[in-house]
Image (tube, rainbow, N blue to C red):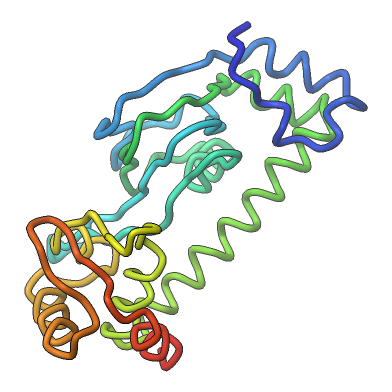
Amino acid sequence: MPSTPWNRFFPDAQRDAELDTVFARAQCLSVPAGTRVFMPEAPCQNYLLVVEGRVRVQLLTASGREVVLYHVGAGESCVLTTACLLGTARYPAEGITETAVTAYALSIADFNRGLDDSASFRRFVFGNLGQRLADVIARMEEIAFAPIDARLAGALLRLVDAQGQVAITHQTLAVELGSAREVVSRHLKRFADNGWVQLGRASIEVTDRAALDALAQRG
């Protein structure tokens, strides 16, 4: 069995012998950044638990715009994958690795066996499913009702590093916000004119966090 730990995500793993049996059948995968791990209309063949890295799940709208639904990080599973496995449906969106990802993959048969045999696995699967569904609903409400400038300010604050830098393109930000690049660029220029940010090539420096936070709170 690979040495990448999975049991740190299960607080009661030591009390559930069946959990070891479940993951003894899992395959440990390493996927490079920028890989499409599933796509619309593809069948769902494995349950995935991410242990390292980050996956972006996004939807292509009828107008051709990409909208990020959510991200899957360490200790999380993909709500669409879980829903498709439980409902024997096909994927309605696509998943792309944002970083190099390490994940455990369980076949459909082993996933169902795990639900039957392991209380810890069952609690994890349905707990993760419930939390991720709540996150998706909150994100859809934000996209539908919150002003774009407030959402942009919030996104910059979430993505900024300790040095005040956000390494991202305007297009990537637009996808993250479910907006058009031109709209994002226009608001970023206004932020820059106000002295809140400085714009660079594929990077943004946050210079006034307090102003961005005040704007984000108004959303």
